[in-house]
Image (tube, rainbow, N blue to C red; front, top):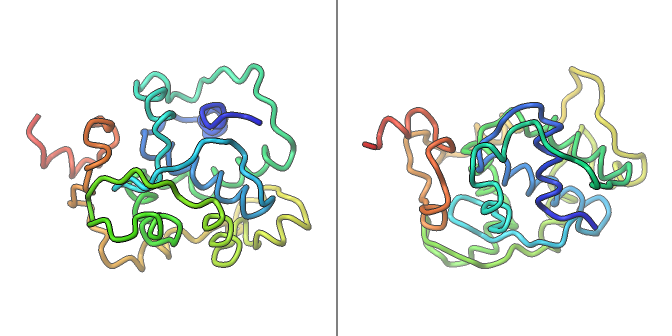
Length: 211
């Protein structure tokens, strides 16, 4: 089994661009969630925590803290993925990768796995509760489509990236339906206050902070 950090390397290499810590964490989360939904097995053993800004694997944040570790140029030596897992990473990157870390964070805030793990924890408050892998598998299996297909379709028909122009995940529509998304909000950094650097913030958020 590969590690979460190895999968992070693959995501960065496949994306072809540098990305923020927030964006990397959320793409890693969607890779794991869809892998659970399609195969009923995790791709990597580490567990996501229900941080205020969405699902986070602390170990990966620490290894990817420096900007230089999140470039597209990654050493993939020794990372072995089966065809399904490899194609699934491509499909997740194609579906979610154009969205910012803040947008993907907002998306996870509307979905049951993070909401359930947070429980009664107030908005913006810290939490180290782990997201349930069963909840992750069930939610994306029952309520989301990837590449225009359900998890069951992907399991039976194979995972591949369709031709350009074919709808993948309508993330824009989901984000547009979230009433509380406000780019001026500070996104409650209780868990990530000491884990997030300025490159993860939107321009409007940077402008609101005196450095």
